[in-house]
Amino acid sequence: MHGYRSWGNTSPTKEFDGVILREVGTDINDPDRKKKVSDYLNKHSHILICGDHGTEGIREREQLLKRSISSGLYGYLEQLAIDEEYSVDFNVYEIINGKKETLLDYIYLIINNPQYARDYEIIELRALARSIEKRGGKRGKDL
Image (cartoon, rainbow, N blue to C red; front, side, top):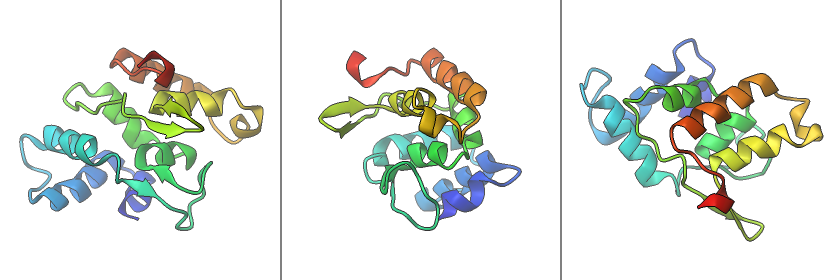
């Protein structure tokens, strides 16, 4: 729920980082904040699953970063992808329909599906996908 509240705000990066940093026992002024946020997201990605709490996604249950995309609130994710002080592992995957699905796969699922695509800013999603690829993000089939 903290994610939903902070993603749409004017400073989603600082606010969502603050939520994570409180969880690990530090604050936004910590000089290692981006490393600590990245470590937290990497370590807990498998349990950071969003159910349907009033914010619909493409699926009923989605990993946190996928839900931010499906909700159209990916300013925070854009920051994670372009700021090199963050070290989020964009190659974390889930098994969906028997195949590895990374965040990049999820983005392309939206881009390439006309039914989904009409509800999204495709130019922004393509830019996000490029940023993730520049940071070493891959599709599940390439892992």
